[in-house]
Length: 214
Image (cartoon, rainbow, N blue to C red):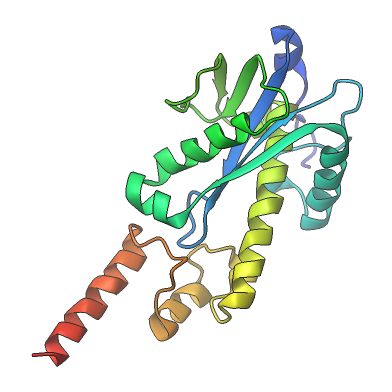
């Protein structure tokens, strides 16, 4: 945390005065893997110390807070698959994952705080969007941590099944190693074919194949 930087707080939740879920997603930018969302309802009497935007925390700190949240909060995690991303686009898929995460809570919230500036169109609960909400609302920061830890675990597991792409470190983003592996090893079933780098590579492969089959 930088000097003078404010931590997210419980102000929005307190002002709403009801059961509030913070919601966030991770994985909109990668070329591979699902998009993951989490919904978290905190217990005001048992909030782990150090909650913050997941990007501002170390992997070790995220994991520690994730375990604490599972013990003291209502937590739900959901995904939208690569096939769904390719079919309905990444924005709609990320919203679908959010809707699934909210629906998976033990008790539905009375209000939802969502990171960003768009409310998922399928959500049928009162909701408020917060730009940079993971740095403003402690419930959204909790959701960002849970989503990040869970999606990272998914990519580490996929990396063991498909070695060479470096997913255990790049988490599916288009790093130099990932792009080199795409060129040398090809596209897997876990790659998002609707994303331009993958789409272009498949198109080039199709052209080459057609040329050799003439």
